[in-house]
Amino acid sequence: MEYEGTYPLPEAQLDRFLLKLVLPLPERGQEVEVLARHAAGFNPRDLAGAGVRPVAGRDVLDRARAEVARVQVTREVLGYAVDVCRATRQSPSLSLGVSPRGATALLATARAWAWLSGRSYVTPDDVKALAHPTLRHRVQLRPEAELEGVTAESVLDTVLASVPVPR
Image (cartoon, rainbow, N blue to C red; front, side):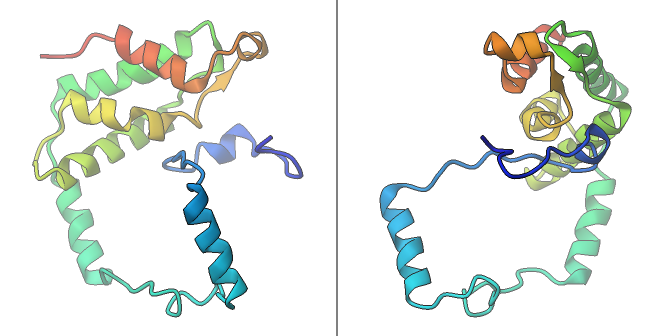
């Protein structure tokens, strides 16, 4: 359903997206409000009119990037991230597992998550917390697994449950 009227992106292009977030549909009341705004003349291209304001300038973002780059990652946590990605390549439900580019994306998001959590180091829990949004679009199910109801989410759950967590 999500591809109706469009063509799915090739794997090489999907792999360039850092995250794939899954957003729920709005509640009925929220959806009515969206329509009411449009009926009243809301222009979705007018960000200022919608009340969207910058919360950070370039200098703040540059400083944040530099701070994230200083977040420490032990070899054990690096190995854990690699093992999670490599385990997807061994999954019988997948025709395509996570590439090394996906592993670097997982490292980047885990570092950012640690920084946002107020820590200067990455934990295995950071890797786990970001595995689904960072990896769900980087795996490809085998057609027979898809017919059996297997999802990328369930494969990632299985991988995360099976890969030993470093202490």
